[in-house]
Image (cartoon, rainbow, N blue to C red; front, side, top):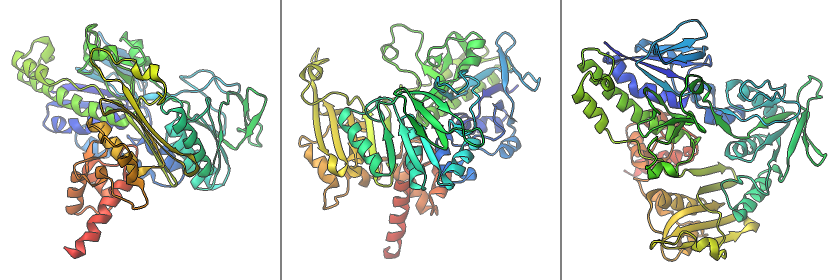
Length: 537
């Protein structure tokens, strides 16, 4: 008897889980049901802004083909929601009246945009009703709203200074829209970047044609346009920023309502252990933006310092790949137990031992924020808040033999360039690089590998010198080019040798570039270098 697996949600992370489970479905080990609230199958939500400014197509964003999945035996349910989960009967009750049962249930419900409490907006964050001219830029319909504004050269106001808000602002400005970013704090990316880097970033954004309104607290919106739509964002100092479209980019919040409704433990996200199992419920799992890895064991040192969901697609994909392997092992154990309920219920002790022997999913390292646009390059990672002369902060934590923090900092505000390296024992714990693409590439590579920096930090700055030296991190073929999917330059090069000649073809063969899209230029460089060298071969 096949293991009944139900996945609630059909976004990028769920799509990866489905792909990884297809061998088990085809072999008859598992029967898979996927429930998606939207009428469209999974697509890359991270690149919705690119779709909105006309840089890509809806087809290029697609991550799953519903018809192909159905042909493979997957039960795909689109345009339907889960009303509630009945844990006692192990079934989900859907809005269409059906009640699929499960042996394993996976929450991949993702997150929803945070809707600020502004006059003129529906205050219900779970079911907001946004007036015309206001969008949170989360789905394909939102992309069409942005497209119309950008193609018409209209005024776009972006509320929020996070990565997605800045990427949207840069893309819209490059395509001809008049764009203003409104954020609370002295500089954008206030939670991720230090003061010096933030000041250089803000100046670079202005040089790219994006107007900046910092230290601004919004209070409400006006919608007095001729069609009743958005016309101005109101600030607490009595001023207003006029516009034709307001893009809300105020962060996201994990969707945990269903989990809470059936009695699962939640914090910021759905609480799961290191095998992604919900606390005290071995038949339910959670992955992606809705999952918070924090095991119930109070003695676990990793979980004492764990944060909530990362909000990045890369960690979600790694969770999906790991969970697919784990669920497949459980399905094999269930099949070996003559179709009885599951390994954990004692159907096959040997298979249970195999499943439990699977190494736990490693805790994610701090993510790297990369922002790329014409005329602007930014990389930020780790803790970079300390200043070079703040001796109290630098010596804090230097106990039990740990070395103290060291700061190397360089700034050239006139030309929009800034680098900061926070190290302990020569190893990077935080970095900021603005306007220094080669230095940024090498620092990110060193940060991710945990390697020591050269004793002379100025060697790294010279990578962006006038002699245009190639960064060692860029020349290493084994380096990770696509951090979202974990694809190396070697794997991309192999795909090009096998006949891939475009970024889209490489993405189809390796999954590189299917996440945030920040590596597209690097993939293109690898392709171009291969074909430039081909005639000489």
